[in-house]
Image (cartoon, rainbow, N blue to C red; front, side, top):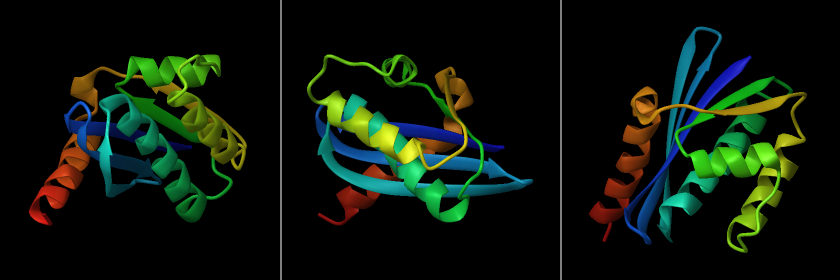
Length: 133
C-alpha cells in the first residue's frame, strides 16, 4: 500500500497556489512540489490530489493508494462522491477518473500537524512562482 500525503496552499484566497505531495512507499520517501498559478485554497487542495494521482499512475501503477489530506472539505466531497459546488464538480470528476486506474483508492482526513511534509512542499511551490516573477 502506498501512503500519499497531499496539501494545497494559497497565498491569498485566491492567490498564488501550490500543491505538495509526500509519498511513503516500500520504505522510501518521495517528494513533489507543483506550482498551480492563481486559485483558491480549496481548489489547490483538489489539484494536489489530482497531481498525486497522476504521479502514482506513473510511479506506482496498479498499487493500493491510501491518501491523507488535512482539508475536511475535500475529503468529505471525495468520500461522499458529491458536491453542489460548480467549481469543485469538475475536480471531483477528474479525481473519480484518475482513481479508477487503481484497484483501491482510500482517502482520510488528518490534522494539519500530521501533514507538515506536504504543507512545506506546497509552500515551496508558491515560493518558486514568486521568485520567477
